[in-house]
Image 1 (cartoon, rainbow, N blue to C red):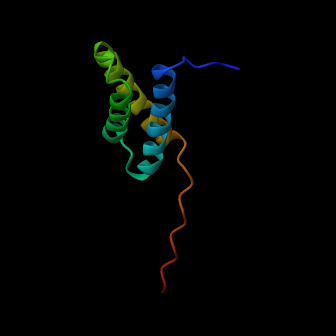
Image 2: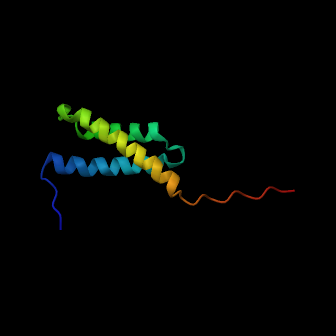
Image 3: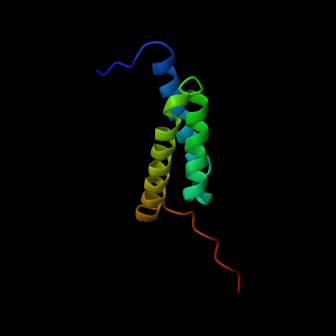
Length: 88
């Protein structure tokens, strides 16, 4: 079983993944590169306040994650709910 780093780093990274995943699901139907990027940046910003030196690399990773999320959304869309048939 993999172990996470103790203390702030291990806890904050787990919480960041949960928050980002929740926000992506909550915004799935309007998800685009900009929304996904903002979700990633906000989630990373909350977790990495004490790590200002790593922000540039985190912004690059957030941009890549946003592009991957939108690409996956286009490639494997979630089954949409059926629209009710129009009454004639």
